[in-house]
Length: 153
Image 1 (cartoon, rainbow, N blue to C red):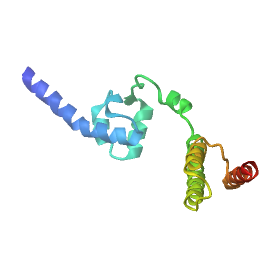
Image 2 (cartoon, rainbow, N blue to C red):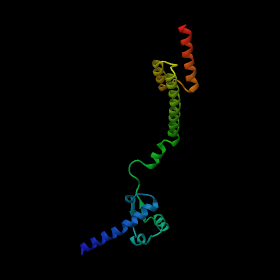
Image 3 (cartoon, rainbow, N blue to C red):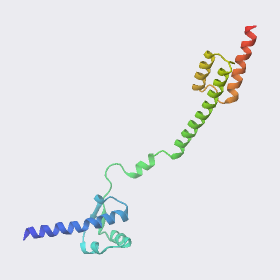
Image 4 (cartoon, one colour):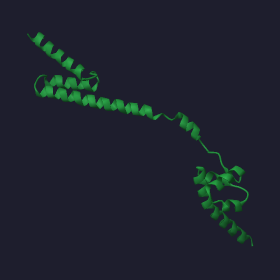
C-alpha cells in the first residue's frame, strides 16, 4: 500500500512539472525558485496567465529569493553603452586620420620630397599621435623643407 502512495506522489509531481514551467514563463523566474503550496487542484486548473497571477496573489504560488548577487546590484554597477560608443568613435577617428596621414607621407616619399629616414620618422610620429590632423602634418613637412633649403645653402 505504501508503495502505491509513493507512485501516486511521483505522478502528482510530474504533472506539476509542466505547470511549474508555465508559471516560470508567466512570472519571469526560474523553475527552481517556484514553491507550490496548498491546494494542488487549484494549481492544476490554472490555465491562463491571469489564473497564475491570481494564485500568486492568494499565496498558493510562492517565489524563493534569489541566491548570490542580486540583479539590482548588477544593474546599478553596469557601465552605460554611451561610454563604450565614445571609445569606438575615438578609435574610428584615429584610424581614419592615421590612414590619411600615412598615405600622404608615402606619396611624399615616392615623389622623393622626403628621404627614407624622414619617412620612417614621420610614420613613428603619426603612430605616436603627434599630428592631430592633416594640415598639422603639412605644416611640419613645409618646416622640414624650409630648414633643408636654408641650412644647406
